[in-house]
Image 1 (spheres, rainbow, N blue to C red):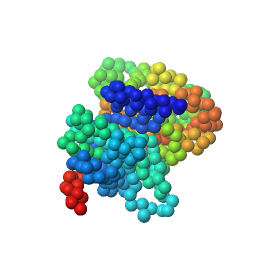
Image 2 (cartoon, rainbow, N blue to C red):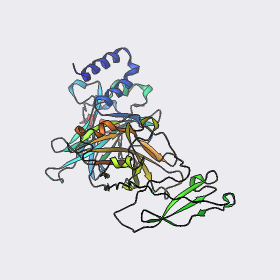
Image 3 (spheres, rainbow, N blue to C red):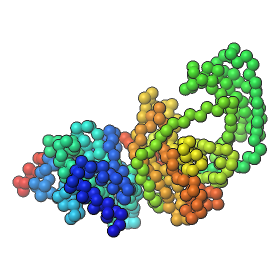
Image 4 (cartoon, rainbow, N blue to C red):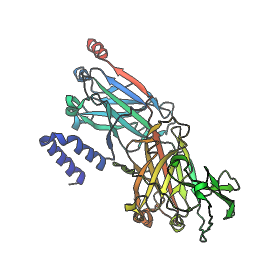
Length: 445
């Protein structure tokens, strides 16, 4: 008996004796064996909302399948297909099935295919939040134009008044569809092995009498001209409480395709650390390249050898916002140092946003398997980026042991490729309502 089958039987037994554990056990089962993330969230679905005003009349009218009107997401048309009594013969009467289907594909090429990550939603009308079920990236094509969840929710859970999903015989479903397109930013990092460290010291006289800023004389290191600025009373976020010290690149030959990355230490090094953990993560492999960003490191081992404990990539755009990846080759948290690689996503260039800005997003971080030509993908819950917490990620993205194992194909000739996809959640989609008037008309036919 397979582990999946054994767990299914165990869940079935518990359902009969301990119904209060149903939701917890189902979430565990879905996440472990089907790559499905089940969560609740307050943000509305970005692309589509659909309201049933008399859900029970579907079965009364003999309607075992209902297709919604079309809505647009990622430049394609889609629709939801709802089976009020289940789609599969094994689920008939016990579960509600919900599927996402591509619509109006006649204008697409004969060999069309669309890769997408989607979520199906159900409104909790008591708590004013949504139950969300999200699965793996799926490939829609002519032979398989729809994907979904045959056991989206049990009829028992849906109709239980205490759950708030069906109130006054009304319920609200929703959908988000994020199409994956391989047309993002590509960056390459070449690391020079700088064996000779550069040093420069400076003295500040009468520090207590300094005004707002002190600027050092220019000095040359590594064929570049530099300067230091000291703010005795702080600058930026540290204003009024800290001493701020900055290293400035005064003169450099500009280049549209080259940037200078420098490891430096100035006086007292103040490291700001913040715990961000993704609690539930979907780990999968897929053939499709990330939509928004690819980043290649040509000499990964030299990051540690040259003392780079943190590397920030160039910015890329996704969902009308700018982002960057932050890579910690030896781990970010003290408990992970040297054992794991940490990778985080940060929102950048937020100065033009409102004072209390926040951005809700679902993101995935990727690592290329160069032997199999596919990607390891880690995807977590929807996350809220804001001024206090502008980055989220994975402190244990991959272990150093697994990463450096030649059999795995992640690090080949000291080269590796990371990637990112970011789907911003915006509540501006289509809304549809199905009222009981439709059913009265059908009954009279």
